[in-house]
Length: 267
Ligand code: 6CS
Ligand code: FE
Picture 1 (cartoon, rainbow, N blue to C red):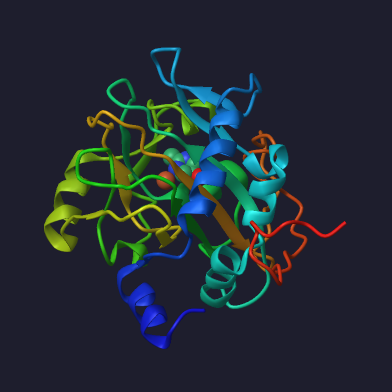
Picture 2 (cartoon, rainbow, N blue to C red):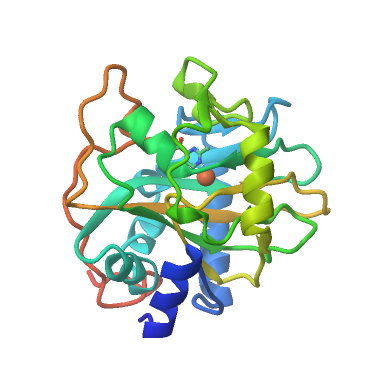
């Protein structure tokens, strides 16, 4: 599924954009599932600070057959298996509908620092597969990245400033990189925003430095994130573990579907 050039780009820059991987019928199906899930009053649903708009729904593959199959579709799972060099399992899934005007920022961070400090992940051998269900453009809160920053361990520059794991989900982040370090990093690595049409897949390294501004367009910006971890990279015990719906501790390998996730299931 990935060319050798794709793999080189990913290794060099820490992320890879794959346009046109899912068609409109598929993104429409996932969008309607996304709307259904955003309407469920479940602990996995996290609200924005305004208390009315949905910021995220986690563990979508536990609440939707379509999303569960989607995590095993060749177009999401194969890139993860290739780039992580073998069997993988799901660490976490997240739906991020990013409602217009009301949402809060996602500050600069490396995901792996959360997975390491909060979940006991042994190595940075995990990645994100993000799929755009709406167009992502400069106005609606695209992810900003610092290309090449995935080679860095920013352990020293990242301070743990909040106590509870709720602060790994809301806008008041638990682990914050100092502004001084961020300024220097931005000068060294430069910034890019990751944009594309619906159906685009963006794969990015668990250590790629990223953030995203609020959505200031008039329409939602729905993105689904699947976080795959290598089965050889287990979570170690931690004193106060996050719930399994944020940090899955069952590393059973996933098998790739032989048909598109959207194909009718044979009975
Ligand atoms: O806490 C987590 O696991 C998630 N938190 C952030 C800030 N980014 C993604 C990560 O998966
Ligand atoms: Fe993140």
